[in-house]
Length: 402
Image 1 (cartoon, one colour):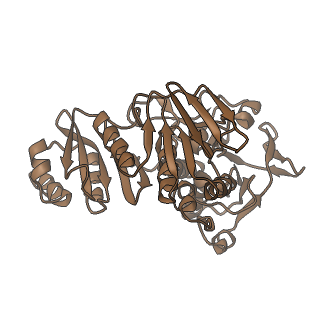
Image 2 (cartoon, rainbow, N blue to C red):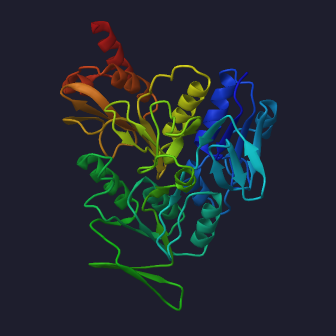
């Protein structure tokens, strides 16, 4: 007999868990409880195509409605979990209903850090509000120069708005990108007409009768019709804390996504899991991480060993460019295959002569071999990387040497 599984949350990681459980042959009950009234959907498009189009499209659902029925996965939508009763192994919903479980998976994600009067972007409802504001605005100010803020900025520029981005750090994506790639991204936005101000800490806001928001970020003062805060997210951990789970910058889990309380797991943006590379616990807010942790928890529930960890991957779309990041970009040297203004190029990161990461722009064919080279930790000279006809040829040459 397989255990009945209840999932608190109905986002990316919850979907990944349900799919993996059924793929592994789980025949017990699976219930996803989500506080939004619509079926689980992809969040990445919300800051991209959803904002670009004048009439927002329908959300991109994870799977057709028939999948849920055909696989016997129950959805309890538009109902929020009020309490987890770990000893009784049940959850209480705000509607008054209760659900018993044998295994509980907490996939509550996170909430955007608020900065009134700015709007935030986390779900479909937020995206609809922001899209409506962009439709009647001429200017936009974005607080935060991370991936989300830059995607919103690019979408607004595509719609013709004047856009200013305020970033508190000395450069864009300081914790994610090396300086020269940060500079490339800043130049990309500048070429498209976005104004970027770094070292810009917002100190306050002033409204006007015309509805314009005046943003004070000394020495800058920005006037904008629309203000967006993209300054990070806070993990939703209150349910876990109240249930007695260990919480520290997220819900603390082990390598199998098991929490400190028996038969309760946590996955996705709210989970703080040991990094496979160095063992340090950390939260990772990405589409891939949600998929990976959903699969890991499913294997653990089924009593099977965890699948191998893939090369870390993240992607973003800005101004029609598909930008994908693999592995670690913090190395000794970045090797460019192509130039920063080319429509397509690849950058390979080396550490002590070995390939540890890379970035590709509109470089779909280069990315599968690059991923394999990172997995191999291939030792390759920078000159050979530059002179290879393609990343596929480079991979074949490395394999031929081994």
